[in-house]
Image (tube, rainbow, N blue to C red; front, side):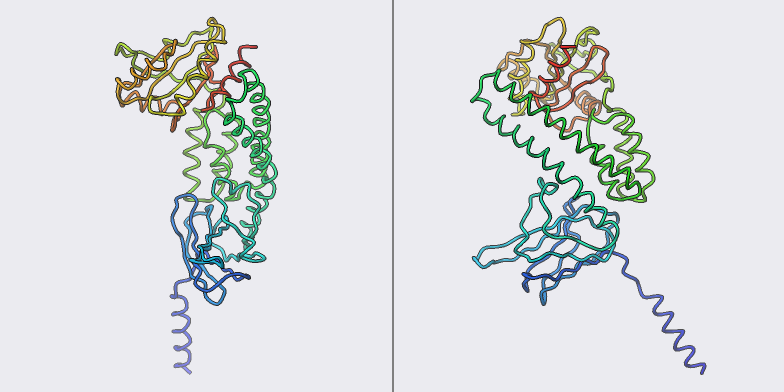
Length: 397
């Protein structure tokens, strides 16, 4: 009897010591899967491959652990298809440490969707298992028609810009203005829907993911929105994403919609150190263009800025260009080529470059800003045509 007792106790002890798999398991078995096809799970937030498997008996199973729920891309690929060429399809999903199942009618119903359009592509497969997946698809289903509407306007704007030389300036500006206001309206609807989803799901990792995207902007979010997003982020348990989002929220608190400009040191054409505030007049709007000689889009925007300069009253608008060129000679050559008849300044050393980038969260150029007479930033972006609209609206007031 004692031997039986100790044997059972030993079995229970060994069972308790056996490590439990607490990560994710993703299974799939649907028509069209062929032996030898490779299935890989790739993070969309770092490009890491999280798990791989090879199709056997028409099935696959991916296993692993994710430190935090994350947006992923499940890719199914084969070396050959019926036409003798490689085939690759993908499925976007929100991953957590759950048992998940991929369902679709047939592999042939899937296609490869580029990450840039993943939010507006109608999903041909569903990943099921757990509340997080239901929340993710609720978000997708709610936002998709709104994102599609916004995408259509953006596509129309892109086509218009490509065909600009087919119009007179007046015709182009009129068409652009119509589409641009539609774009602003569509984007406002999308943002409102995202905020509403977050409010309805204050504990969801999906909400934290959305909040991260909303905070990754400059001079767009109001102080009230930033405060609300911060409060929600603080309540969501996530040791990886939450600290990152809260850090972004702290930065956003100084780059909110309607924030005042920050003074920075710069260098003028004579080599003298100056301050931005020396050129900002209290009774003027101030257009600031951060650019560089090597930046193609920056050079493309200069004629647009010149158009704004020529058509705006000089007693209402000041224009300042600030170059990020590393070499002064490159800056000087570009100034001569462009012949810009307004104030030219330069980030003449590493400290000035860093200060400008941090002050306005500049990660790419051109960066175009419009500062109101009271010092508040009323426009920030990279579209010179949109800047023109903002200037015209402000000068009408």
